Length: 355
View 1 (spheres, rainbow, N blue to C red):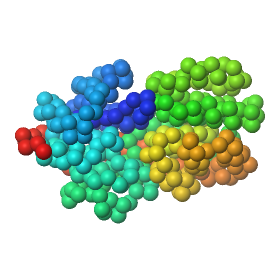
View 2 (view 1 turned 135 degrees about the vertical axis):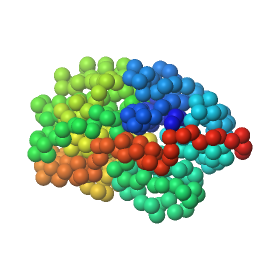
View 3 (view 1 turned 120 degrees about the vertical axis):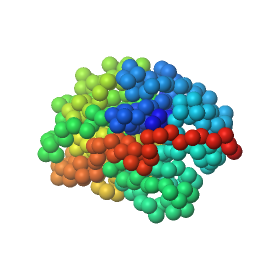
View 4 (view 1 turned 30 degrees about the vertical axis):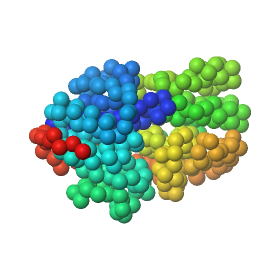
């Protein structure tokens, strides 16, 4: 079976969608399927993608949902694919009905349960996601909901990571806000916490190659970093870096699940609207502290949250254990297996009856 991945990724949108699709494609490849990436520019491809995707088709424009959907159907015919994975929040009902009319089946990543859904499989890893949330938006009577952290699609390097000892003191703080534009969040966190932490506490910063603020960030660390900040731009593997840390100050995307696998207590600051429901759910479960959106918070709120950790070692231990309880390491394999379990390996013939 050939599976098309329609993914949206850019410095502005971020690269979480691409990372998630890459991980799911790797799992599908291990299960014998062929995968094709549609959307991201060629510069976003990594060397290992040659072994993951049989083809990579850049699609730099989005004329309309209907036109993009028609283009995807055409590509499905070209690659003899009867299955797609949609990880693009621009996909609307018109887009989905175009795919459905053509006979294409698909998995769709969702994080809100607010838009009409016609997909065959819907994945929402939010701990607070429940089937009843989809009662009014799910229109495919044969659809299957894959809800909760069990279905979080993570990079394979996190499958065998050794969790942090919950009793370990905080000596290194992870700061990362995805692979795209961090909106100034990294500098805000560092400028807030560096003066207020002992000189023995280090900061490990991970930034994506697509972050346009990297040059200024390098300069800032050189001037103000006090020799306590290590910057890693687009490292080939992040799990080994995560495991050296004792606390994470991060955004509200897939990084939450990765940090949870490592048993890291977390302070969450969202930099995109779609991250908020997930961040709030982890906060409600006691597995993280959600401060708020970057545009709405102050350095004082960041400092207050950090002090809550510093003055409460029992709280750190509790949150680290809650994070581990909420984590899942093999979500990509589970989701890939659901695709294979539900559908045969034969391609679904695509009709010419487009809307």
